[in-house]
Amino acid sequence: MRKLVMLVLSAGMVLPAFADEKPPATQMFTVAQLEEALAAARDLPDKNLAEHIADVKLTERLSNANFARIQAGLPGPKSRLALLGLADESAFLDLPAAEIPTTPAPDHATQIALINRAMDDVLKEIPKLPDFFATRVTTRFSGTPLRLSNHLHEALLPGLEGNQRLTGIGTTSVTVRYSNGLEVFADPKKGAKTECHISNAQGEIAGEFGEILPRVVHEATHGKMVWSHWEQYPAGLLAVFHYEAKLMYKFPRHCPNQIDAPPTLVDFRGEIAVNPADGSILRLTEMRRFNGDLFGFGPQPQMVDQGTMVEYGSVEIGGTTYLCPVKSVYFSFEPPLPLWYTTRLALDHFDKSYGLSEDPVWECVGDVTFEDYHIFRAKVHILTGATPGPDADPPASDSATPPSQVPAPSPQR
Image (cartoon, rainbow, N blue to C red):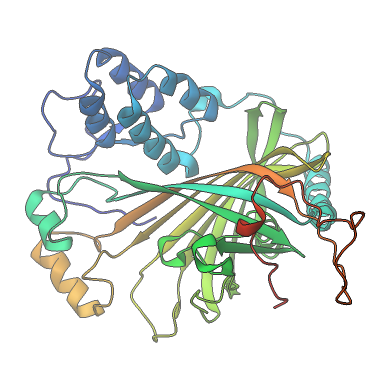
């Protein structure tokens, strides 16, 4: 993961509480230090507390349980939004050591059996998913991994408010249709024509319902996969495995207006959390570093790092329970405009001018939740010109979406 290193950063500085004035560098907190700082600042107005939270970068993952507990004690929507961005950014880090169970690792044979069971579960369960609708709600954040000095921020992002880290930039809601193993994003404003609401340039790669699971399985089985640790989940202890792989990969298009990127060499790594009781994968992460010609423009400097985290849970669709995504987080690190299309020489000159040890990067983070699952059924009636009788069956769907807003079925691709 690339870091933005600035002369103003005081390496190793740890502050036990929020500074009264904005510090000259991002405050690096453990989860315990974050809680301590929030407790000391409990009397701050919502807006002020949100600004302090936005200046923090966690060194450990904020678990769902701790996030819910901490968020419940915050004074308002601004500080809660800032905490959400902070928690999502930490989704790819290790949990605090105190939160990792000390249960001994299973023997090697049991580990292999768990992996094989998880792989088999993926292959068996995905084809069982019915055609359905779901609502995909995305809250987006953008900023920089570390705080920038005003003059450096102005040089990188002229005209934008400086001296901030991750900032919430809005929430969108789209209807996702899952049909025949494909995800379709529909825009009601365009007559339900298939259009892509997803921007791969921001690291938001679709495929949570089926695509990412077999892809991660492929990465893990064609690379190196090792035992990592046990992790406590509401369902019980999960067996967590770490994987790494270097593969040529072509990311599929989901919509007609999406860039069709050529195959490129990608470094993959991440974790898979398996429920030992049934072999189901309840959490996975996938980190991607692109090493080749990502968009067909010829060899480029290291431009984009991306990551996706998906959590799965039991969801009832049409009276049957399925294992489906309930939350996802994506992130990307990439050169900010106007440096996106610059040459290696220009980047080196910029780094030298501002005393940076590595290329500057712009960070995009997205929080995704899935809700309002509805099964989709349709009946086709061939009419001969006669008026349908009173007993004719109407199209069937348990979706609450009005018929005029239901996306049209996607053509086979």
